Length: 84
Image (cartoon, rainbow, N blue to C red; front, side, top):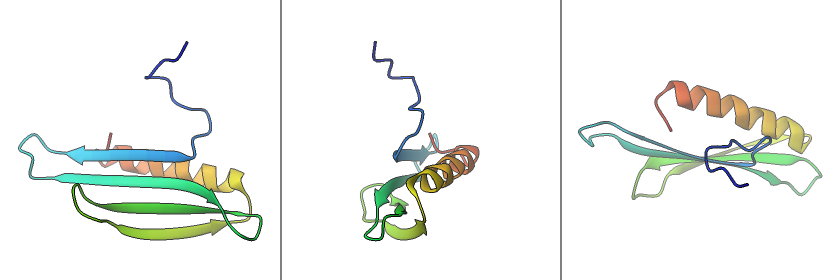
């Protein structure tokens, strides 16, 4: 059974959007965990206004588990800010 409401246990991709009822705020936030060249993992975050290219930041971690933990913390913070 594939439940679209089920949250993946250890997600490596996070896509969030934030809009207000009047449509004045339309932002996106995309975070991915990617392997790096040195056996670790990178947490790559892109954010900006919907419909335009965003800015990108990258944080490096010694392993994928730590990067996934960081992605989880980002998700919690962004949901508190109104992203869904």
